[in-house]
Amino acid sequence: MTTPRLETDLDAITHNTRSLANQLAHRGIGITGVAKATLGSPNVAAAMIRGGVRGMGDSRMENIARLRASTLQSSLTLIRSPMRSQAEWVVREADCSLNTEPRVLDALSAAAVRRRTVHAVVLMVELGDLREGVASEDAVEMASTVAKRPGLRLAGLGTNLACRSGVMPDQNKMDELSSLVEQVETRVGHGLTVVSGGNSANLDWALSTPDTGRINDLRIGESILLGTEPLHRRPLSGLRADAFTLVAEVIELKTKPAQPWGQTAQSAFGDLPWRPRTGSVRQAIIALGRQDADPEGLTPPVGMTVLSASSDHLVLDVGDHELAVGDDVAFGLNYSALLRAMTSPFVRSNDLGTAPHGATVAPKDPLFTKYAA
Ligand SMILES: *Cc1c(COP(=O)(O)O)cnc(C)c1O
Image (tube, rainbow, N blue to C red):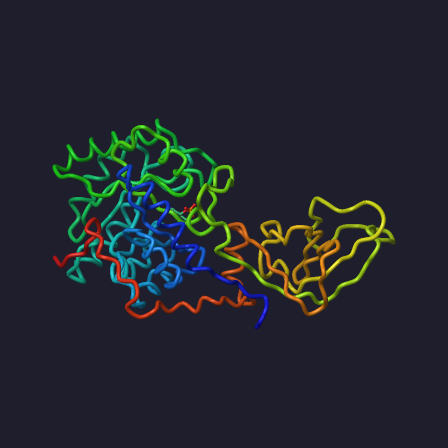
């Protein structure tokens, strides 16, 4: 089989989804599955749907369109603020989008009216991580203007923490969002159906808090795909961390001195932190480089160590492993390595991306149901 290749264990993804969906359901929270690290793979989305997500979200319209064109029947939410230039596309393919900008809302409204449809909007609130979101002082006013735009329906409020600045979701911040929901409801005169508290970084809070308040949705990618929580990158108990494996081939295997010789200056990309000081190393060169995956995010088999990586070569200390030129070596991946491997044209994915026909039809999510105007 060709290498480098990324192998996806869809059962692990279903298992992780089911475990988190069950735990969160006890707390009144549903999951919007996020498969953006897999280019919006319909197979991965199908695995999440089998595990119990109530809809799918993605940050890119290309991925939303790919999911829409598949056999999956899931609600689709664009989770990055829409580009104004893509308003028509957003309204055509997505049921809902997360928003912060009046000019974009105007464009979505006009596009929805032209298509005689209603597009659901979740207004994102800034709670301190300083990425997307309107100031909380402005949220009630902005929310009331969303509700007034023709072709748009104010579905709810959301926030995103941790991604830019590492700000942790905590009780105060979630209480603030819940309180804003109540103020908005009073102002607009109807209940909000979606209160999307955040991403995988919210799981610690969501699974331990005595009070989830009004939060009824989390947008989860990393924890389902990798079985880790992103605040401390710890494994989540009961979840599988082996859904993805990157397989690449040994192209040189030799024992070499641990230390280079000659005058040294900078190497192509700087060095990874560890290298043996003396003696010799049984080193393998793997046909895998920075163009294929983020080497800092690769976990080699136990007993092997990544020594360095350049564009096209990964150097491993392979210890006493039985290994020969032409053999495959399998690596675990963190989120960054997964993202790069999925988007690299050099890495073949064994997930061919067409959902098994009819296998996985999610009920249309009542929260996001699209209806004609
Ligand atoms: C990527 C993303 C998510 C999912 O984040 P994970 O850490 O993978 O769970 C949720 N919300 C937004 C806005 C995102 O961009």
